[in-house]
Image (cartoon, rainbow, N blue to C red; front, side):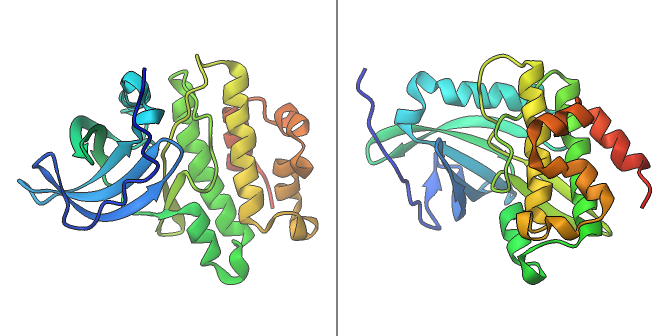
Length: 240
């Protein structure tokens, strides 16, 4: 089967998709495709539209996985809420597009880069970690996993002394297993470690941080926190 290879869409503001959505701005791109902020013309409501590169979406397999995954996670606050799919013509090729809720937030990587010294203070980073852990705990509770957690896949917005966090781009690596959920745990700890400044600042961190990061040895992290619940329990009960 020959599939057209398109490596970028580069949609311009004002472009109308399927006669229903007007493009406002590009939000990001990844291996599967590109995400845009769009306006639903009939209602004026902002949405997010993910267009899949056709050679990454043979027979709509990637679209079907992503839509079904989001539907399974529809009651998990950390997941983006899926709406529906549409067909879009681009350069004479039919492209499948998933429409979902638009989340007003900043990529975690950008958020950290905008902090003084390009790193978070310990107390703030612990609050952010706690929000992530609670969200991923909901995902694991329904026997699912993310599979590709990193700072480019997390949207962050401050709320008081805490944070609202949402995750995007769930990665499909087959059926859920204990090992895949454990990899999510290590990935969450890695984001926390990086948010604090990584190796350079690690030696000066308080004991609670070192207890969580364990020198970024995955075997030690998982020995201490074999489940995401164990990590949440620690965050809820440790003493400074």
